[in-house]
Length: 439
Image (tube, rainbow, N blue to C red):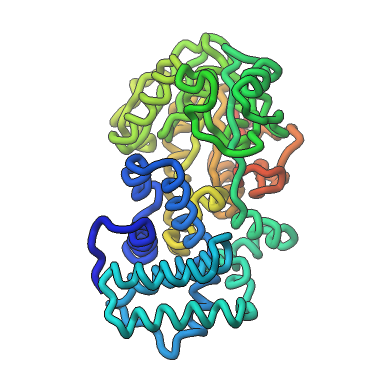
């Protein structure tokens, strides 16, 4: 079954779903070049079909397997993606069922399927409509997650796992961070209300505002002038934990796309210097865009933060934010393709990278300085166990308790579990460099 370029919106969605499921590409890479060319209504449909099909892939694939007499051959993988999209529209959208079936069959023809396969598509979807959804064989199917991830989350969170997995399948809110150099909570809400945007204060972060409904950033008053930024509440907490003061030198070690760098500069504009780093030189451009929009400045470096010989000038930092690369298991609701892209073997590799980054950054921190370690993961292997391993091997590392009233205390930092207060899943730990701790 071929996959010609162009064509209908469903064909475009099918190709993207296929590229995620069978070629390992992410929707974050695939969607922007296409959605930028589409009208708003088509953009929304394409995003919903792609995100929804990835969100419910494991559940829909399990149903599809029960309806096939034998597995589809690899050469028909595109057809599998189309059937997943068709089942998604039947199970989770308000599209009229017969219209969904008809358009899916037409898309099969458009993608070059022979008559035998278009008949298969028609039969499977009509039977699915007639029979309803089959019983679920496992928690992994019910919650539409890979088996290995369900097992890890159950082991890490034996009481909270059902709510966590459920939250991963919910559409997240749109949350803003207002720039305190231009707004306080009251004036920020008033500005949004004047623009016809219903919003309420966040529950966790001081500068957070949650929108009742997502909206294009062009509708947000002052967005392009840096008065507001889009950032989940959990991610906003880093600036409070850094305890920034005038004159400090700050490192944002894994900074792209720059949301936290901007938040740092907004929170304390009198810092002596902010250095924002990322290994990917291309992603430094995203930091530049964010800083230009907010009217702030940082020194940008393209380097691996762990390889200090390649970038560090020997001047120590007062504060370091290490928002380490991670599994992203705390932001699955925003990036449901993580369920298809992440592999169990990735976790140990990521943990090694996280520890290596922590080691490198620690050597650049002054005595008495503070390092905030953060991930958007809910897996202890990337979070509390990293901090535990680091403290056990560094007598000058002192864990500072986080006394703020959010998340779960783990003994080595605090964990926000996805959706517990309608926020992303995030982990934070605060470490202070204390030579006296050697004694």
